[in-house]
Image 1 (cartoon, rainbow, N blue to C red):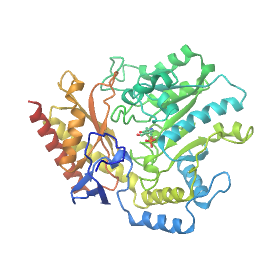
Image 2 (tube, rainbow, N blue to C red):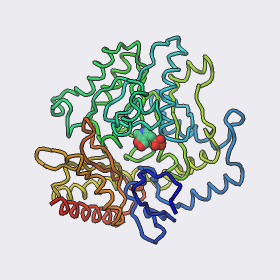
Image 3 (cartoon, rainbow, N blue to C red):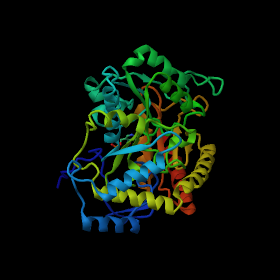
Image 4 (cartoon, rainbow, N blue to C red):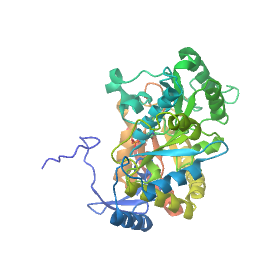
Length: 445
Ligand code: PLP
C-alpha cells in the first residue's frame, strides 16, 4: 500500500528505523548503520542513553506540558539558569527564550533584535545582514537570512531581500586572496555592507560560527570574528551567533564562538541541545539586548504553544548534565583530532577529496573532479547523493551538504558522529567511508 507519510525525498525507499544503541541505528531488517552524522548533527550523545530515558520517564510521570502564559516550571527555570552559567562570559548574562527547532531559534533572534531597537525608540533598524553561504532555518524569516540556494529558490519572491556578504572560505577565497596577507577582506566586507545600507537600517549581523549545511564546515581564519564583532560594535549592530549546529560541545567547546573569545549579543541553539531526544531549541539573549524590552513592553513578541514545556526542558538539562559528567566536550576535541587525522590520510590516497576540514567532531569533506584546480563536479553527476546513498547501503550515515561555492555548485558531506564515539567505531567509519569513495571513483570511470 502507498505510504501516507511525506518523506524528505518521495522517490527514495528509506529503511525503517526500529531501535538505536550508542552510535548505531538498526532497521526493520536488522541491518546496522553507523550514525556518522548524528542524524542532522543532532544525536550528540548517541541513541537510547538510559540516563536520559530515566529523566524523560520521571518528568512524564509528573507533568509533560504547561502553557508558558499560565505557568513556569522547575525544569525550564533550571535550564535557563544552566544555559546562562555556561554562556555568560566577561560581559554578558544571558536570558533564554525556549522554542522547538533551530529555525524558530533564529527566527526569534531576528524578532528580538528588531524589538530591541524598537523598544529603544528606533523603528528603522529592521534589516539583518547575513552571509550568502549560510543556513539559518527553513521558516520564512530564517530563510530570508539564509543563502542556501536550494532551500530558498522556490520562495525567493516571498523572502525579505536582506543584504548579504561573502563567507570566510579560505579553500575557495571569494576574494582570491591568501590568509593572512588578505588582511581579512571577508570580515571587512561587513563594514562595506553596513555603510552601503546605512547602519541606521541594520538591526543585526547573523553568522554560523562554523558554516554547516551551506558550506560543509567552513572554519573562519583567526581574527575573523574579533574583527566582525569590532565592526558590529562600532556601528551599533547586534551580533547573532547561530550555534544551532555548533553549540553544546560539538566543536570541542560548549559554544563554538569560544574558539575566538567573542561574546555574541544573541545565541541561537537547537539540535545537540536535546541531542534529538525531544524537540528543543533556544534563543539566548544577552542582558544588554533584553533590558530595553524588560524596561519597555516587558514582553518578547513571539512564542509557540510548546515553548518551555517541562518535558523538553528536563531532557535538555539531562543531556547537558550527561555531557559534563562524561567529559564529552573534551572528547569532541580528542576524537575530532583523531578522526580528522585519519580522514586526511584517506584524502592523500583518494584524489576525489579536495579538502578535509573541521573543529572537534564537526568535520567537512569536499569533493572535486580535479584535485589541483579544485574544479567541482558538474551538478548532473549528483556526486553527493551518490556518495550518501552508497555509504548508507554499506551501513554508514553521512550528511549531504553544499560545498559553499557561489551558485550552489560543488559536492561535500559532513561527518559528525556522536561525541561518545569510540576509537574502533571511528576506524570502522573511516574504512566504510574510504570503501564508499573507492567504489564511487570506480563508477565514475
Ligand atoms: N541553523 C543552523 C546553523 C542549522 O544547521 C539548522 C539546521 O540544519 C537550522 C538553523 C535550522 O534548524 P531546524 O532544522 O531545527 O529548524
